[in-house]
Length: 257
Image (cartoon, rainbow, N blue to C red; front, side):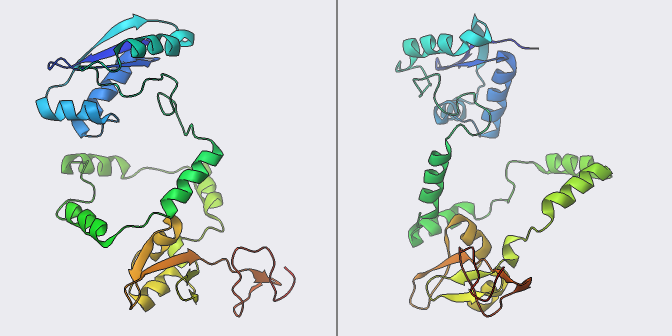
C-alpha cells in the first residue's frame, strides 16, 4: 500500500526532521529502527536520539502524488533547513542518495572515489587508534545472541533448488578467491604464487585484501609499509608461463595465446 507524502519526525526535545517517501509510514518506521540500532544515516538525528533516549513521533505534513513528491519536499526544505531545531542537513531534495535505490554516482565519479580510497595511507597512530577502538568488541556487534540464534535456526535445513545450484555454479566457474591469486610485493618486485604464500613468507597479514583495496600489509625491515598488487599470469598455448610474469598486458612474450 503506497502512502506518498511529506512526513515529519518530531522529537520531544523540540527537534524535528523532514523527509519524503512513497510510503511515509514504512519510511518512518525505518527511521525509528535505525535509531535504535545506532545506525541512522543522519548523524544529527542519531545524536538527538542518543542524548534524550526517546523516539520521535511521526506525522504526515502533506499528502501528494509521486510526481510532485520531490518538488513539495523542496518547498519544505527551503522553509526549514537552517532553523535551530531542524535536523536536516541537505538543502536539495534531488541530492544524491536521498531516496534513490542503488548507486546514483556516475561511472567517472565511482572511479574517482575508488582511486582516492586506494591511495589512502593510514599512519601508525591511526592504525593504533582503530585497533584500540575495536579491542574487546565482538565481530558482529549489531546482533544480539538471540538474534544470531534465530537467524541460524532459520537457515538450518533450507533446501536449495537445482536451478539455484546451477546459477551459483555458473557464477563461480573460473573464479579464484583472493588468497589464491598471484601477488607481487611492489617494494621489491618479488612475486608470490598466492597471497597465502606471501603471508607465510613475509609475515604480513590480509595481503589479498590489501591488493583489492589498495592498502599496505606488513612492513619491510626498514619500517616501510609493504605495498601489494595482484599479478595476472597469462597462458601460453594453454599452459601457465611459470618463467614469465606479465602484469596488466594482453599478450604473453612466451608465445601466442
